[in-house]
Length: 244
Image 1: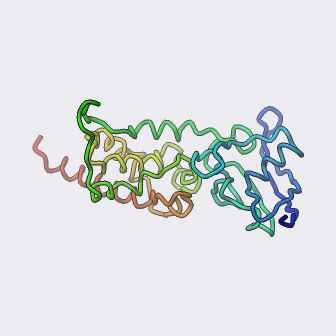
Image 2: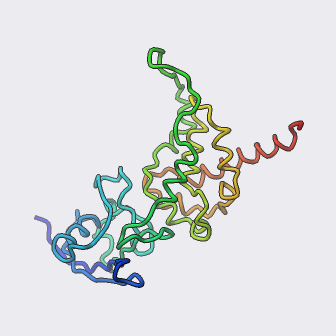
Image 3: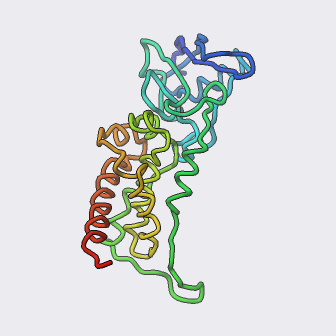
């Protein structure tokens, strides 16, 4: 049986019904080499503070629910292990989002941004009785990397521009737009480009690149945004040269 150690975990708590501002609470948590932050939060809730609020679901970095700040870095709690934080751990709600309670944030704008770019196949008229769409490996390769987003919001917590401008549609939304724009089965690029070309679209990004560093699925939203800027520039050039 693995040897158990103890780690002091600082959790920034906030209850809008009783608190005027977030405050820190400290908990001694037993851990071994396999203990994740999500396990630690479960221990705190079950044994030390039953009213602790946080989101979680799959426990395997698929659902994207358990995003939070760990020592000021956006992380998934299920992929973060106490063994790597022997000097102490500070856990906070995701940066750049309004806090609802404790580690739970309001992701309304995030969800609305995803909806706005229409992240689905548009204009494909095939019916179930017809043969399926066929794609070559090269066609799939154009968008495959950008299809792995799990909507965790870590890239928004990392993005300094989203912190300055909460109306920015953000890295994940732009990445999903680019993913479908590059899909050979889709015919909705014109509809999405209206969002990408908007004042809160691709040009809000200043290419810091931190969004790609923190992405737990290695989607590389920074690359998708820069490719989106290229497409936006093409749109502008065509609009300038096109006869009115």
